[in-house]
Picture 1 (tube, rainbow, N blue to C red):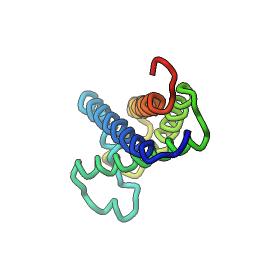
Picture 2: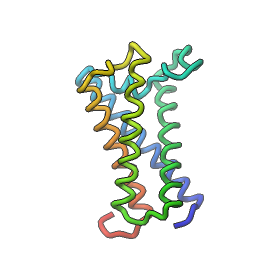
Picture 3: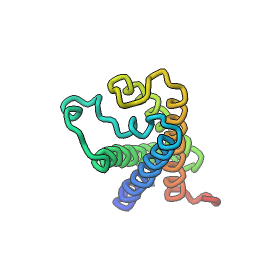
Picture 4: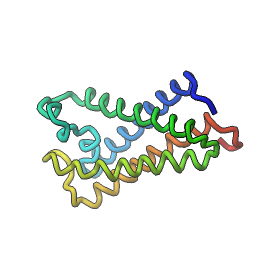
Length: 152
């Protein structure tokens, strides 16, 4: 596999698709359950200077999508440079990295009063399941594009 402009464009698109999915999923979960997982996704209270501003929801979603696209490009580079050619391995990599990021970011709830409590098991569960699904979707998209395996 080679690094190509088309591949980078796909990575951009897959980051956008996966990021929109995660945002929509967590927004629905927050609406139904009242656990502030969508608020956490858009939270920037832990970033110095930026936390002093109040942004509209659309701008906060834009920040989330920028991070999602950057992650997708990084995963694409990992897949290409690691010469990962198995659909299963691509999906596992994307899912695992997304899971780790979800675990690493959840503690930022302690920096804001708008987000769920750090000890909220339901919030953590929804958050992690959302990130696992995000990673699976991204992995499936990359696997379909980068492998020739049947069924993808």
